[in-house]
Length: 80
Image (cartoon, rainbow, N blue to C red; front, side, top):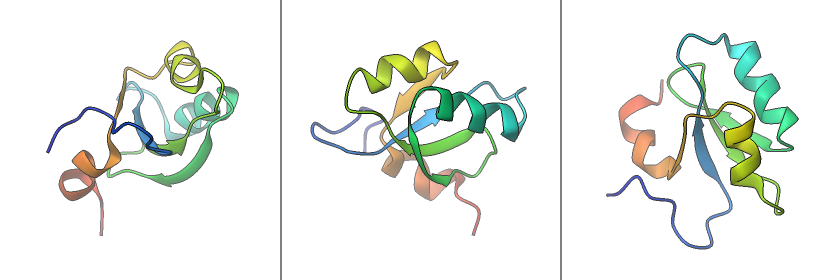
C-alpha cells in the first residue's frame, strides 16, 4: 500500500498539524471547500472530498501538512 493518492480518487486524508484542535482542523477543511467524510484516528486527520477545482492546493493553503490516500491510514489510525 502507498500513501500516494490514487488517480481518480474522490476522497483524500488531509493531515493537519497535530498541535491543532479538532475545531481548527474542521474549520480549515471547510475553508478549503472540502466536504468532510469522516475523521481519522486523530482529531487532526480528516477524510475529505476536496473541491473539484484545485481542491488539494486549497487544503494545503488552509494548513494541511499532507494529503494522502485514506486507505493507507484507515487500518492504522482509525478508532473503532
